[in-house]
Image (cartoon, rainbow, N blue to C red):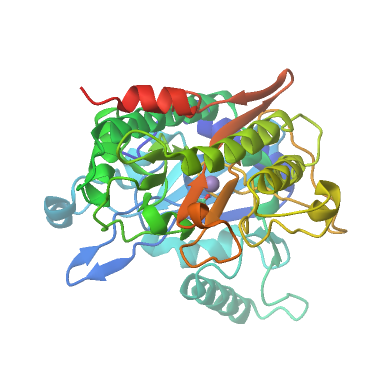
Length: 444
Ligand code: GLY
Ligand code: MN
């Protein structure tokens, strides 16, 4: 069966129950991700929708969950899925079908996806609440509205609205997914571990003269061979000047002695991803200028990680990194003046233009809010995971910085679990001190 098949009926039932308890009376309508065409007869690799998979464990495309709460301990869940089809299964592999899903995934009913629109109009009364996020899939939304319009036309009751009250379940889902449960945490730990192994493999294999995609092959081979079916996002393998392109994806430059190589990559494991960046010298030893920049970023990252404390505003790491990087930029001769005033003026911005942290989980930029409606930063919660990823980027043509720094881009990123006892670095297996990296890369 599919790599995304997670048959754990009790787990998914309890996640659904928690969600429905927060949502209250009404019907939840949650489709999985759509398949995407790539080119003639070929689709992009399929990955189920993160929210859908979180509450069902069901791997197949063209599936929709419809569920409602009965009381605080029970609910009714129906999975609308593709029917068995021996001819299609010869091409695409076996399907669970409407009977298979009840046993394997612990839902109360399986029904044919072709009956969704007809059945939904009966399951979700026009004068009730429907929990569905509009705007993700206009085709789905249009079919949804037409189903209710048909139902309204059939019923001919003057006081009946033409559709239920729509409520967005996304905030409730995000709140629940932000704090990882034990199963997710163990998946996050394994994703982090495999990601560390991949970075080590890339460090060991990289040599001047290799192409970036060759280092990528070593990195991702370690992910796959360790049991990660896919990356959490496309790997960024950026050597020399490419390290200054934040989301570089070409990965096709030939690396030279004296280059740094920045790799930002994460293995996915049981639906959860890591997100780690390491920057190391292609020939195994940092030049003095590279080492100077690297130390500034590493120090800033340590300050950022220390700031990841339960209850602190989520952007505490960002602020700590700003202070530390600014002091570092003064030390490197890039900025001059009073550090506090430079921080206030965001003088670091030309060389540090991105945020320091994002939530991490099933999505690399995971669900979870960052601030309240009136703009107050949300607190870090015990059990949430966020990245700390400061960097400095000095492009080749940047005449504002000393010559020896031009062309150097460094980012260092780890994944931090917020615990009662302080920050826990899940990705500590990936070496990051200069001494550790140089030792690992020492040529035989
Ligand atoms: N790892 C890519 C990013 O955080 O944007
Ligand atoms: Mn990141």
